[in-house]
Amino acid sequence: MISPKIKKLANILVNYSIEVRKGYVIKINCGIKAQELGIEVCRLILKKGAIPRFNLVPQNYAYLYYKNAKEHQLKYFPKIALYEAKNIDGTISIGAEHNTRELTNINPKKIAIRQRVTHKISQIILKRNNWVICEYPTNALAQDADMSLEEFKKFVYGATNIDWKKASQQQDKLKKILDKGKQVRIVAKDTDITFSIEGRGGIKCDGHRNMPDGEVFIAPVENSTEGYIKYTYPAIKGGREVRGVSLEFRKGKVVKATATKNEKFLKEMLNTDKGSRYIGEFGIGVNYGIKKFIKQILFDEKIGGTIHLALGMAYKEGGGRNESAIHWDMIKDLRKGGAVYIDGKCIQKNGKFTFKL
Image (cartoon, rainbow, N blue to C red):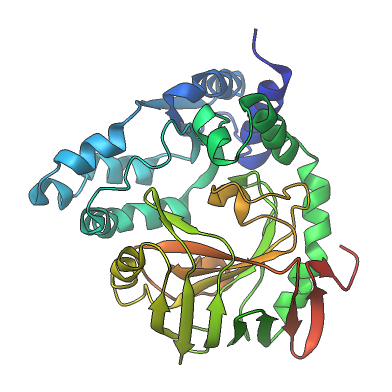
């Protein structure tokens, strides 16, 4: 018997996030531990008269691939995946982590090479297809979050199974402020950073791309970032925790980068390509139902009272132009001291907005 909470989440993914219609071809990428949710998603897709393309991902696949792949294999361009990306109508990706650190000892150069190769396909999916990503509650994620599995399930479904249409309407006010804004300044401990958003458009994140969701973001003007920032939480990528990240910017570019843990990996990622040292996204978390950092960016970047700046690729919907094979969100918590200013006016102080959402 499938849990009512799983049924509700599946319904949100199919009928709200992707808005599946008759005849659509929908690819489902699903971790093996999340197959209960994946199967329910398939059932609903079939019920809509659409065509599911189900891809069940085994445990340890990423580790097996990067551990054993030679250079020519890493550089192989997946033509079948390209064809699929061009011919499907939507993608639902359901993660089911069993070991969040499995790539810790993999050479980061291997990951960077593969990301550059598959970047074209990622761009096609972002531009052409409906897509949503979701994380299924597993013991691995619960352990990282310092929770029992039952506690973590409650945490997850409390963040996902909400009224997303109402949440979308609440985000409209913040979007309008960003749309009209020209200059952003973020001030907090070890942080004083400015950048332009003039001519760019704010993007609401209201359950159509991430689940859970809950942020409004915009792409800074590429060469405008000046100042410095020290991030509150570890920046996690490829299973590696980079702690104590401090970045200094000049004319938009990271000119100095330090970390208290895995600094070498940080610098490897910054050297991925020409765009990886520039900011592709400024996001403001507005999901106040997510209160705790759990080492999962899908949740953490949505924490109400935080902001995040992503190194690398800009999403083009808001007018961003930065190109990169990476998109790496890093989070600053402003709830215990900090403020966000738009054109000199404080819109958020100590994690609370100065206007009603």
